[in-house]
Amino acid sequence: MKQLTILFSVLSILVLTSCGGETPTDNPDENTEETVQLKGFESLDLTEYGFNLSVMVPEAEINGEPQVTLTERGALEIVVGDGFGMEIMYGEGDLALLKSDLQEDLVFKSEILKEEENALIYTQDIPDSGVKTQNHFFYKAVVGNDVYEVRDIMEGEYGSSMIEKMLEAAKTIKSTSAPEVAA
Image (tube, rainbow, N blue to C red):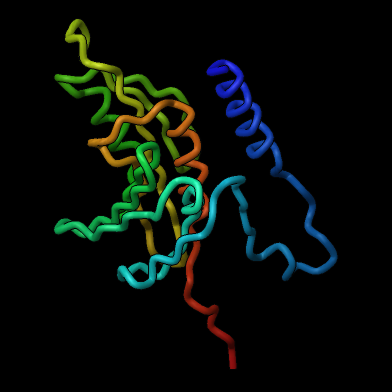
């Protein structure tokens, strides 16, 4: 059953990532705002927490209500059930710096499993320690003129398929601000 779940996750990701390259329709305004829907997920408005954003999170009816916390360091932590935890914060989204940090880490041995233009999925392990390998993701979200760093909550323990789902959810971040109308 676990292998079937992993296979389904991989196939889903392949289908989602292979949907690019379409030619524009006759009406250029139809393609300006792309809406991504994830099965079993619903939109969460983050405006009340000081972020004019929305993001897809696992459905509350099945997984429990999202627990949203604004930390002292300015990160917005979103936890849904035991298997979903991401944080969003303003930042530079410097993937090259993260990759360098992973290579130079003196404690953890890191392996990059997937690399995209604005995203990384990686593992961290302490060799010969008996500590379970940790799965992580990092995503650089550009919304208007703002750059956000989105990642899993480091204290959480997430399986590789959930990391993939959280990354897909992170890619759904969009502005909740109404577009400005030119006068």
